[in-house]
Amino acid sequence: MFNVKLKGHLSRRLHEYIRHAFAARLHFDTLYKLHTRIAQLAGISEERYDCCVNSCCAFTGALSEAQVCPYCNEQRRDKQGRRRQVFRYIPLASRLVALFSNQKISGLMQYRAEYESKDGELSDVFDGLHYRRLQDRKVVVDGFCYNHYFFDSKYDVALGIMTDGFQIFKRQRGGTQSCWPVLAVNFNLPPIIRTHLSNIIPLAIIPGPKAPIDFNSYLRPFIDEAKQLASTGVQATDAINDRPFVLRVYPISCHGDMPAIKHCMCFKGHNGIRPCRGCEIKAVRDTSKPQAPYYVPLRQPHCPNQDIIEWPADDLPLRSDGRIAQQLDEIQSALTKTAKKAAQTRWGINDQCDLLEIPSPSLTLSFPHEWMHLFLENHGKNLVALWTGRYKNMDEGKELYIFPSAVWDVIGKETAVAGSTVPSSFGRRTPNIATEQHIFTAEDWGFWFVEIAPHVLKHRFPKEKFYQHFMKFNHILRQTMKFSLTTEDVEDLRVRIIDYVQEYEKYVICYPFSYSKPHPDPIVLQIILSI
Image (tube, rainbow, N blue to C red):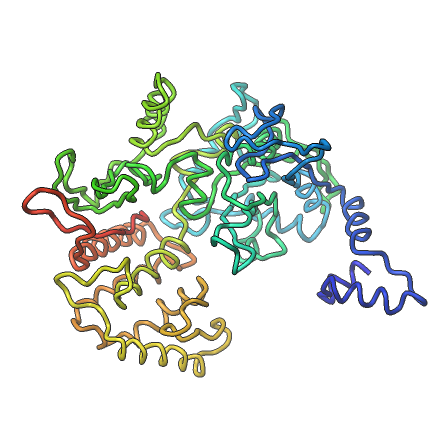
């Protein structure tokens, strides 16, 4: 019956209806019994940990003996001694062992070992600098150096970790995230299938109702297992030749938007004076408003305490592991809480990243900017907001790039009508961007910016230079979506992105705040720093 449910995509409600309707003639187990039996057969079981009822932290690691949440002072257990909130983690090892016990999947898992890099070409994560550096290093865990090197066995598995806040209920009060899924992407599988739903490996779901304060405490079970899998590994069997081997696993990257990654890296994100995780560019804010957010323009306004007025886009001060270590030393050696908080805000770092206990990640190389949020969900949406005069209640300043409402309505109608002539293999029908923007997904944004916008925006801007500027963005999107890039392509992208960002700041002139100086410089509120 479990197989029938999977193959027939039966819902829980339909399964229960069939079970009751034919109870007199057929015996069907409940879904709970089915799932329990399958878990026993598969050798997969979840681990349960107590966590704060407000999702501040999980009682793991250094907090395993705590009875009160150190952040909100809520009790760990109720008056009857029962857990108030539970965090569930599904161990990784048993599922990876199961993959190698299947002949078909075991063959697919050899993709990493059989992958051949080509000089001057970037086609997969295995062409990246971090992976290639790891191959020349021995594994060191908790200060002990083991005899094996990273990825010296064809069975070694490379993983990418993904997380993001997710709102289950669309009309949830307050609009806050109600859970944080943590997933693993199996890089050993070919790129064409590794992100299919059936191949994504769920690790845990951090329960709501709020974003966690101590993210490391929720990652502790994964960190401990990953350290064990990198050092001693686990015994597994290759189904193809029925040969036992030691399975070792190395997470090499972590993916998510800025709020998610700041939790994983223990950075401050947009709440820090240096908000970028890739460079030390210094942010500014309205000093007349203590809680005002920080902004990161390349060309900054004149202000009394600002050392650098303009940051060169082609020579940003990149973060390094050595510099981060020095900054952490300064933070941890602060004598008072006030001094520590000031140092954390100054450097944009909260604390040591516990993920670095795993030997394979690098703080400067394993947390790349995430393409979907960077280009589509953030900058792309902001472009549309600017074009329609809805960006933070600001006008267009000295330039003319806002569409009249009648023109934008026509653009929306043409977008919707385009679905009648676009083959369904390109994706789902794109909604009207003028009236149905609230239902746009990242897929809709991507298709609109790449395929539809160049046609519906042509000759529609008040000035032609803004269309040409958008087409630079369109070209950047098309380049980054290629399956393979040469080193020349990457350098070309770097030059094009710098040109686009500098032109963006030149055209989009606004005055969100000013200082007491007589001639404040204009700034723009968002830039793209992807390479």
